[in-house]
Amino acid sequence: MKTRSQKIIMVALLLASLVHAIGTSAQSKSKKTNFVFILCDDMGYNDVGPYGATDIRTPNIDKLASGGLKFTSFYTPSPVCSPTRAGLLTGRYPKRLGIDHVFFPESFTGLSPDEVTLAEALKTQGYATGAIGKWHLGHHREYLPLQQGFDEYFGIPYSNDMQGVVYLRGNTVENFSVDQHYTTKTYTEESVKFINKHKNGPFFLYLAHSMPHVPLYASPAFEGKSKRGLYGDVIEEIDWSVGEVVKALNAAGVADNTLVVFTSDNGPWLIFDVEGGSAKPLRNGKGTTFEGGQRVPAIFYWPGTIQPGTENNDLALMFDIFPTFVRLSGATDYKFKNPIDGEDISTVLTGKTKRKGDEFIYYYNGKIEAFRKGDWKIIFPATAPPNQPVTADNAHDTLLFNLRTDVGEQQNVLKEKHDVVPGLLKALDAATNKLGKTPPPLVQRMPSDDSHIAKRKQRQGSK
Image 1 (tube, rainbow, N blue to C red):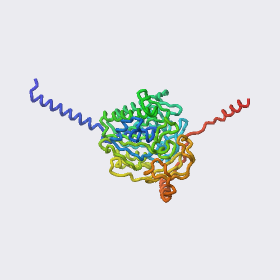
Image 2 (tube, rainbow, N blue to C red; image 1 turned 120 degrees about the vertical axis):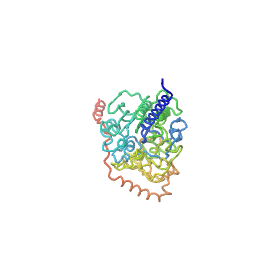
Image 3 (tube, rainbow, N blue to C red; image 1 turned 90 degrees about the vertical axis):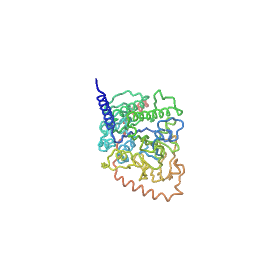
Image 4 (cartoon, rainbow, N blue to C red; image 1 turned 30 degrees about the vertical axis):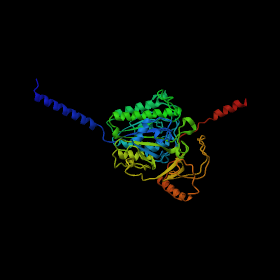
């Protein structure tokens, strides 16, 4: 029989051990900031609630915006897939990398292993790194995520409309038979597993959805539910995915220590009309350097750090992600191997400062098509975009817009404000000089030799 004093001592010891266990568990969670970067494919500016969509329900994305920071003038490095992803992961203009357009299953090139990626930089700071979803930076082994700084990879190595859609696990094909109705759901499940596996952190999760790039697919739980048809169904399922990721962060107890970014790789592919999304009130979409091609939704969510419901209307660039994440990882003295074109905007996110730079070069197919400095954007003469018959922007001479007052690029004020042009051209010269000599473009696609088919048709026609 234990005495009363012995019982008191035993209870005290038990309480002490519990306190120690709780403290140890709390200490096992990393104090470093975790990062979740969610990238949609071909999602338009007007396709989610915080940016004006009224016919697509996005309650989880709405919560990100109401609980965080919404940028209204956030730009992607390119109006097409691969160059944007290269710019995101290196913090550099794709022109510096020789990546002018998209890679294809027949491409023999990819993002150079000599480039330092964001994943590689974060690994030096002790981060677990995972890429889930669309890669599209080269599918040969040397260019795949595991050789570019990621510890784990699961996803489709290029666009979901290309030949040979497969699921890769690491460097190996896991599934040759992909049912794209469940792609968003599968990516989400893999993301939740990654968070749970690395919840003691720190970790960097790069979730790159394959949609709403065409062809569009939604799982049975979402198909036929949106007011904007299949495209809306797809966005609503992506919104569900965002909710599941945030739920996993909360369940893991790391939500307050995780910066979540939600954005798109470029604007909507308007030639697919009802399945191509909307960039309203912006002009045009994917494949063009009008605002609809490269200005995209961008929401930064970090409970307890970013002031809820804030909005930033100044220019910000996807290039900024690399230096910002590196700075927030605690790497105050990190030395960038290569020149970068982004800016650390960590204090911009908290409202303490404004972004210093106010310039952006709009490249497409390796060519400078436009330039922005401050509120002014100059667009150089062009023929009609061959891939945008729906919006049919006809061939034009030089255009000048004030984006602060005319975000839709409807009023060409070149004649009235021609005195602005010399300053813009001088600033563009300085910006391109800063880039220095750039490499020749990578060979990203070669035409097949179909001469034998032409000869056969000719022979058959002569009979």
